[in-house]
Length: 214
Image (cartoon, rainbow, N blue to C red):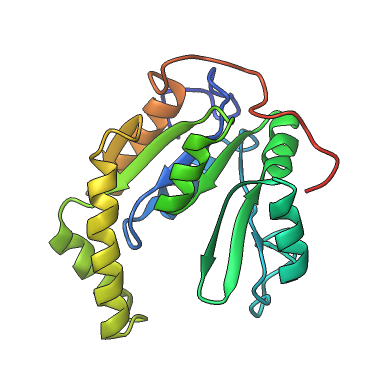
């Protein structure tokens, strides 16, 4: 259990937390620990997608699954704070999803890619930004290869994308950068940042006003 704050306590700064970093860096493991050790305080933003559900996935739990027509309609209405296309499918984070979770008294966590981070930063949503980095590119490569699920081409593509993302992470676009070398040490840094000195201002107001639909 973290000693920096009560398990059920909310951070004083309740703006959404945007977490980013290259594939394989362990950012998902870190924020899942945050959720486990502070139950009820956080909620992961659920994205909309046009891809079909995979076996075991559930609508409203893993993603909101919508048609391309519905997605384009939502985007045309400026319902997304960020959206992107990967292959033939679209993904996006709706403003209403963030607002609804904030209204329930939870701090929303957004796990998004580099271009999505840039879009959120250009939006009217006030958020905090944390970048998770590997100890070195070599360590990241070992982690990616250690998964045993990636083809050689996929590993190379992810490493090339990681180089671009690491440059962005060092650009000053984030409030803090956490190097995930030792998991518990990195988690401690994340917990202290979330509950302590993270962010330049404190606010308990929702990031955006709730909307009628997501």
